[in-house]
Image 1 (cartoon, one colour):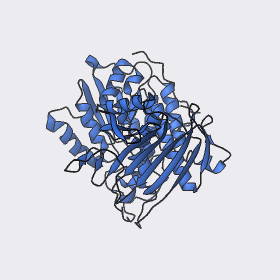
Image 2 (cartoon, one colour; image 1 turned 90 degrees about the vertical axis):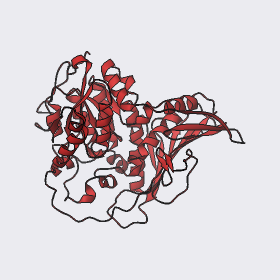
Image 3 (tube, one colour; image 1 turned 90 degrees about the horizontal axis):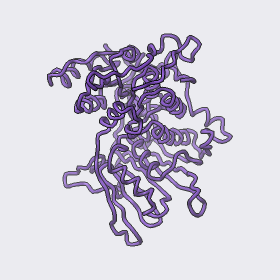
Image 4 (cartoon, helix red, strand yellow; image 1 turned 45 degrees about the vertical axis):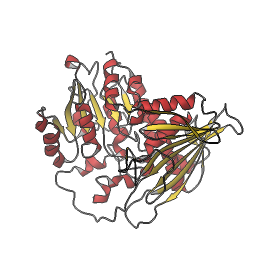
Length: 451
């Protein structure tokens, strides 16, 4: 695989000296017998799925694990490696040291959201292929910089929108874009998940073996509590993006893809944190509406997208059928997650497993599709072929979908509707909203202006 030489950071760059790993030059992926060596960064929750996903692929080795919590390593290595007769991986606490390892070809970034973009950009600059979990960025600006890095360096960068690998979603998009459902004028995404209170947590000493400073990374320095750490970080603005940017990002991506749009011209989001008096900062009830230009459409030449987050007891809205045991992927007796599309000739229901069209005034069941695939395999295929398209979920598309999350959260936090210019990628005559497209970074964990 031929690569452009990687530009070395200088002391005058926007990242402090010592904050970045050494930049590699030349061809860093040699692949003994076509083997791809992968490192997984973040191994508490979803990281274990990534470990197992890569281990199930031919001639792929999970060669390293990285996490700020040293307490996890022994159990993870035993469970996923030595108990299976596999060679134990290298262990890293600091991802910057991992990026200096020339044996590592690719990384999966499975950190909390506030680390996603910076961890990915540093990896890209170090010559590593990157698959980054959703959402690929914690702010709009980070997504812009991540796309810029992907376009500057000759590596594969895959977004965590795993449904883009599924035949179900591919056939859904083909059908909606074919015109067979008429003018597709509206899409709706739903994330109705049973979310209990997180309660309140008191300040306590950092657990032994945890590098809390490194965990905070770009985020402001704050005292340690359990509600700011494992999983519940999702519900704090410093680290997460609420359920819109957690589970919701998958359905946002599907809605935008099926609707055939990129960035909106108008955003309105309203919601609240209801029912519970606890430490959660993000809303657990949120309703967002977007307007997109539709030059080929009728009437006002607009397309509409809606997204709704609900936290508790609620109804289903036509997203697949649940079996007698309450089982269907991402849909259950408690949860209703998926998409609806509306066209001039019918509507479509869509979940991870399948889609179904209902045509005409009588809503007669029509075409349908299904099929799942392996997102990890597509990433490895893209690396071997040096072909970004094989990764299926391009980071540019990931950015557009994440942008909708950030724009809605800004509207919610400001408490008002916002007008947006897709060309300049900024709010129109709104200094306060534009300031929220980025954030302050804690040095040396700074997303660079120039990548």
